[in-house]
Image 1 (tube, rainbow, N blue to C red):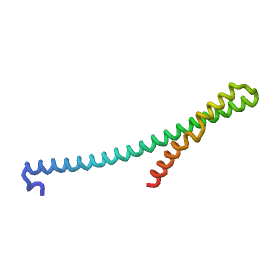
Image 2 (image 1 turned 180 degrees about the vertical axis):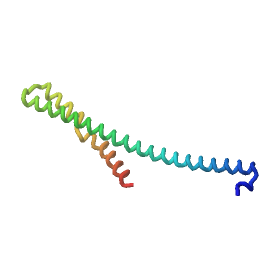
Image 3 (image 1 turned 90 degrees about the vertical axis):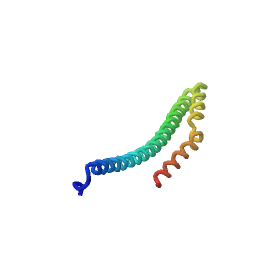
Image 4 (image 1 turned 90 degrees about the horizontal axis):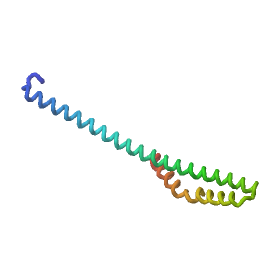
Length: 111
């Protein structure tokens, strides 16, 4: 079949086939980039929520240690540290952010 075509037509057909395969490859590549971008956004949200919960944990641990020190020594400095750390790391301050991240993650999982 191809032998019956002129060389000009054979070259044109080859060029069209190469363009078609290239277009198909570009389509798959763009789909992969879109999927990768969505996955990275999900990862970024989870990482931010993890960092936030780590900060809360660290502040609560520091507040707990300061409270323990205050109870044993009754130094006002320890009470000040406790109040500062408790206010900085109190979960009520971070609940809206964590709640948003959790709801977003649950929506992504439900898809």
